[in-house]
Image (cartoon, rainbow, N blue to C red; front, side):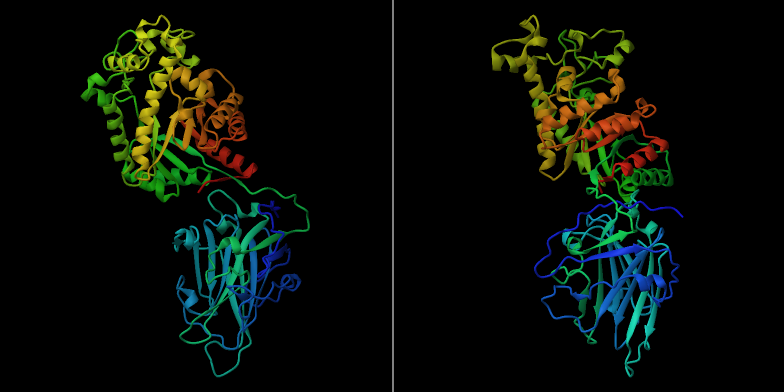
Length: 581
């Protein structure tokens, strides 16, 4: 028999509310066999303690229930067992179909939040006939949560027994009993196993119709202070005990992990659904797509993942075809329209033209309003690389240990005129313009102004905007004139591709630490990882470097493969990291 590892995920409150003490129940492991027949006669139940009596849902200062209700709990490797005793002088029930609205009958209800965060928690209700309604709540109704009725507690075993007769008002009954075995496997959330948590938030409710036309009574184990059971932060604590001391652990750290992907229109719905389910189950929260396909975005969203549109910003051949005069110009006077740097697709725009920022902002807003799009990502939001990553120098037969004029942009007439208006100088008159800090700042600010224009345009309509940026503001400014530490965004993805710089995974940590410091807590920083470069145990080392230095999550480019998915899942479980949902 496998041994369950429970870890303490919630600190129990030490101070009780003056009106309603915090409910705590110790559920003990049992090795006794339990037959689910509703009779609660096994030795395991005799050893289990009764809960405190149910009270009015509004609190103990309200009138006590006229009929007693208590629960008991035990557990083993596979099930949480719940036994309820409901004193009743007239046992009634009428609903017989699964997922009927059971609380229209007198009923017993179980609420389970193994993860203690009030999200995607579970509800199981039954009446005296043993008819079950089970559902999942996205979050409480008060937070605009929706119920998920198509969730079923797979493998649930439930039985009811009665000390009396059903639907016979002429005699006096005594009680009815509920016995259920709730499979832990049915309560998994994504890749998270509820058995990893030693303390759960739980509650129990009894709906009792004392009169034919109501109103109904709501009697609960842990009162919420109002006639609303969906207040998970007011529920009680159930501690899973097995006789061994388990050192307390802090709550799981929530991280948000992403993938950059190109669209694969040739994939079928089933291929994409399988891929997205795998990503979700292994700890990813969102995917960036380069391009848009409504079908693929819909399938992504249906899997529980966010779908974001990854779009090029300043590198825009499509706009240059319409407006050749918008091309960025290098120090030799060559335009990226007809003489692009490095590769043919490097067709960069000049950021100093207001019409450029306007056109790009309109394009981003149009894409942000497409169906199923959760947010937009800026890419190539910079100048052409004045300095390439060192590992790429050999590809082009160049030595960029000093800045070369053919890769130094933008020296167009518009930029030079604006700079001269500000400073009285033409940068081309300077023998060393790459050392002129005012000229560098001018170009940093020009890109920042474009970003600000896009951000303000999208923010006005409540749209989310992030950016893929170069690693660390220091490198970003030197390599591509990108001062992203002073942008207004709330999420950045520094491309800490360590292999590009002939660095080991520990270098990622230094870059992330600088980036986190630069944003000063005003934005999230997600480490961009090039999956093929992470050989052997470098994947785990890269994750350590990112998370240990303040990254809010990671984002993978060119992967991961199925093995990488599972390694990320194992890493998150080992470190008690929970994916943002």
